[in-house]
Length: 190
Image (cartoon, rainbow, N blue to C red; front, side):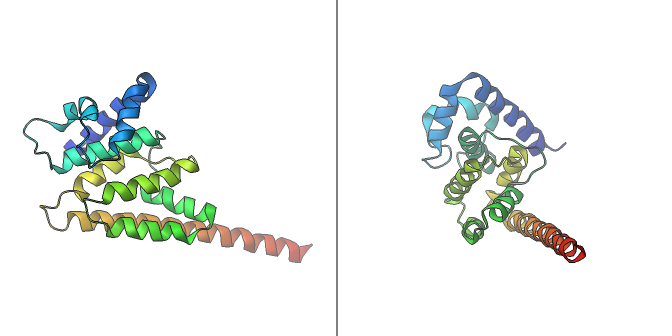
């Protein structure tokens, strides 16, 4: 397991403990989403121990941890193996709403400084339908997405998210058309 993956696993366990044991901490982490990542002092005690010594305030790992913590506090529904983009695609299929795709594309196009705002809005939609996703994978992806010093990393993450979103849409669409074909065949046979 890589360093980022190990950190994401440990951090998720920490967030789950906070969710079980400290409602005040979760409230402070939720409130942190209204500020730039890492700019809300009451949240420092819950995130900074995981940041690591020597990290700059704009370090990708630090920003990713703050965003992950705020989103988890807002919607603590971790589902192992369900990518964030796949959860949004499932929601789009359930709601039959093209506006979700527009929000998803806006999220992919967003500047790193605004990414947490788009994620907060999309997570609010997921929470409204109790759609969970894998916070460890989200945290790992965000570390790379926020790493603007290494050209191409963010683009690779965005492309991965697009593949996950659109492949889930197409697989759900195929399932739906397969079910309607079976239904139509059943009516013809009757």
